[in-house]
Image (cartoon, rainbow, N blue to C red):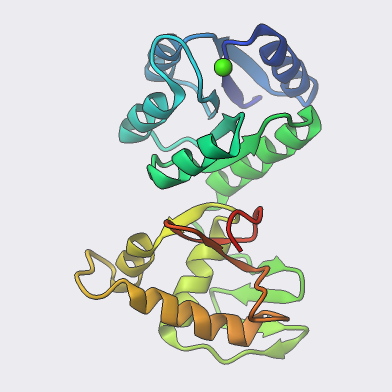
Length: 231
Ligand code: CA
């Protein structure tokens, strides 16, 4: 059965292009031009992923994202027109899984949709090793190899790397990473995340001063791969 994608966008030309591209890729597509309509459709059920524009009549995309995330776990991909909007998306920690900056190619969007659905389907497992370039992370064996050579990591370094790499491009806050590490709320100094990340980069990055695997997202936290939003 085809996965069902909800496209929320008030600009009809963009909505049509996105709908067409997703249908062409084999998805079932429904759409909404208003935020409040989108919320109703999500609550009616059956939606596997939401593509969500930010500037919307009714309820804006940021608010839609927040409300959807309060009750649902399906992936949400935000569409943003400007980098200031993107900063807002990341800064507000709304729970979006991914983002695409306008103008985007339909093919790029389709590949993000597929990647997010795959990730959502795989997330509960700790099974298959994750590979990214020269890096292979094996959660079952708790090992990391770089160009075939084992990289010794501490418990915390491994947990942070694995958490980030399990959801490529997703931005994690320092707090999220520490809560993961401590298997519950963490009340200590969040800057210890920065220390773990610095050590990790020295071990896994080609050029630790110019990291490409673990990105810093200014004012928010870290992501595994993704666009250069702060360096
Ligand atoms: Ca819009």
